Length: 412
Image 1 (tube, one colour):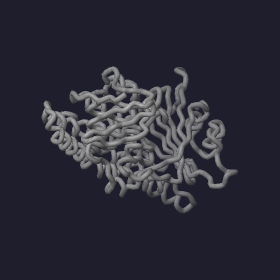
Image 2 (image 1 turned 90 degrees about the vertical axis):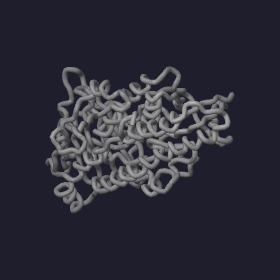
Image 3 (image 1 turned 45 degrees about the vertical axis):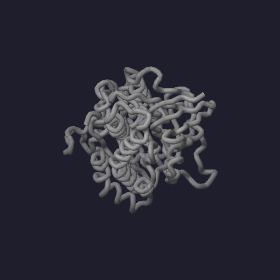
Image 4 (image 1 turned 135 degrees about the vertical axis):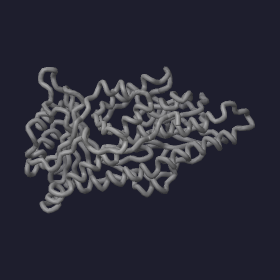
């Protein structure tokens, strides 16, 4: 069975749903393919900085999401070696380029459901795994695992770090960093709370970094990034209970309030995965788009989580891509059959404009995140001292500096 669709988006993650909603706001429909049976919420939560909230406001969902997530007042960095704070940053009083620094910890499920609920019924097609892509004139034929074929004028790959669309474009496979991350999600009872207030607590130790962020008064998200042991007998087994014990042991002189969060985390709310990223030069020189095909989100710029910009950048992508593509498609509303070439020319120009706007921004974010990660995960007495005594304030400020970005509105 062959289906014809003007705009096809592969992947119902943050970038895919943001792009689809942006197009919808501009009066353009799309079909979003998702290989899973429902929305995937791996990772539990992520930090949304000022730049993400500008994108969410452009999409028309910012206010509803603000009501469900507490505003963070600032961050504190603590050495687990000495147990002492090494830097403190205020989010609300810091000097800023575009207005207020708005930082919240966003529940991934809440965000995806909010974006999906704003889309017309039937926009997302679940259980739709893409297995191959081929060309037919000005169209792309997208083959699914169930044997169906979708013929599309525009193909957008938002299919994550293992993107089939990125592979079709010829982009290099993302590279393993040699580090891994553990993520956890703790829920407290109404009468107890987490006792961390509205502060983003970061902890640095010998070769690891950890962070604890409140989503609201009852919910905490935390992460722990480290370099896994190389010897088989030293490796952490894929057992959430043992992973939890490993984190608790490594945190050393962390505050009791932090240790309580780890203790409160249920084993089923802990996941572990290796970290990957795309080499920055591949982002600068590779094919992010080709003709009527492009990638966005982690399919475009997978990065390490060290400055908390992966999800934020995906939201930026969605707004910019929807704006560029709608400008191209709506510049002439009626296209007769002989003008298909002219329409494809405009589509290509729209995608090229998106890439031009996003290529350097993505390069900057990937590079900064990778370098910051190397510094934060230093090991050894000398390097740890330099990090904690001299570089800690700079690293904390870098989180806000890279958030000073405005992706613009949809109706520009």
